Image 1: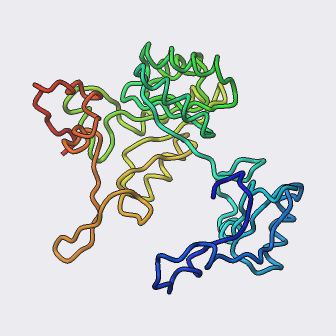
Image 2 (image 1 turned 90 degrees about the vertical axis):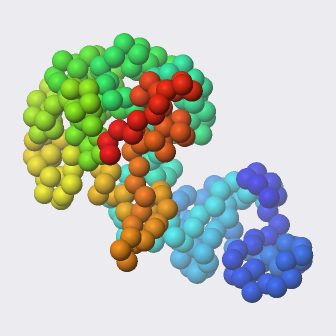
Length: 293
């Protein structure tokens, strides 16, 4: 079935966990005696029905018994355990952001992301103070206004911040060449010490009410405190979260220790998957040199 179709039953793992005959029809194993919520009920009322019924899922149906939504007991537990999670005020769904570049084909990606309900667009560029990004930010704001928030960057100076703020960004990423596997400062001689960059950009951004993200250079919890003390609103981290269960990547064992693969966009593996354009190495004749190793 799919959203909007008539609800005739419910199938969960409990119905098929010990089912040996996998050729049986779903109609023979699904639960048909369902507890449902009506379309007009509020989120609080739906949660109350879930608690009282002691069910794991609560389908929400309209007058024609067509499925329009689904509430989960796990949502209740997560709301209790993580009350400070970033959520959309009306739907209570977790906020979702997506990163795109400034290339022409990313205009189509932007439209597709907006259609799917993205809340925030992060423009991914190692040097954000470019005519490409400034024009793209202007374009997004003209078309979508405040419905889509835009985070620009990366920048490290007050003048770079001002250019993007005037273009209409809602937030800024601060950092250039300070990541644990980034060699921008060594290879390109471009960048700035992260503490200095955060301090000076925060002073400028605060005047205009724009929050900043300290992006990169965080290798311990103490450095998070330093970044926040210097004016950052939040921190963006890679290596500290790369080994978490929720992070993408495959596990492997080395010297008896379980590790997870962690790759940068400048690695050969990432370049072969499509990041080579970012480093001007997308030609077939170009030798791809790993960066940040």
